Length: 117
Image 1 (cartoon, rainbow, N blue to C red):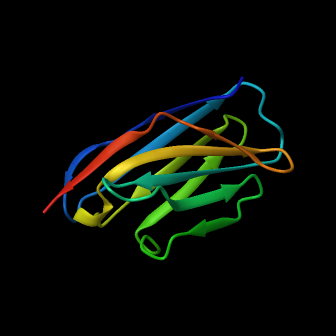
Image 2 (image 1 turned 30 degrees about the vertical axis):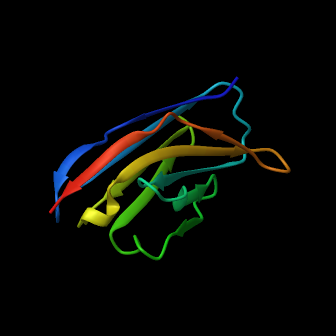
Image 3 (image 1 turned 90 degrees about the vertical axis):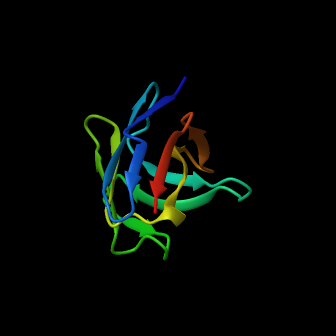
């Protein structure tokens, strides 16, 4: 059983920063992809950033240059440093872990990020 626990959401003013963290536990394979997705009210869940165990990353165009994803393979944790936050970044942010071939997704419960203007 895989569990993902997020932390670090909250309320911040536009231009501010927040750091999200996610810890994975359970049967974690040595190679996997971890990342963050978000869902704003009335919108579909969308990719924010992902990172492989090898350190390869992929970002949504809307967050490039502002957000940085990182991970600790030994601890099975993934972080998202969010700078220069905008009101459009307001959403519930979900930690995601993909294991196996084909990849099976696992999700955290989500953490709310609210950016005020």
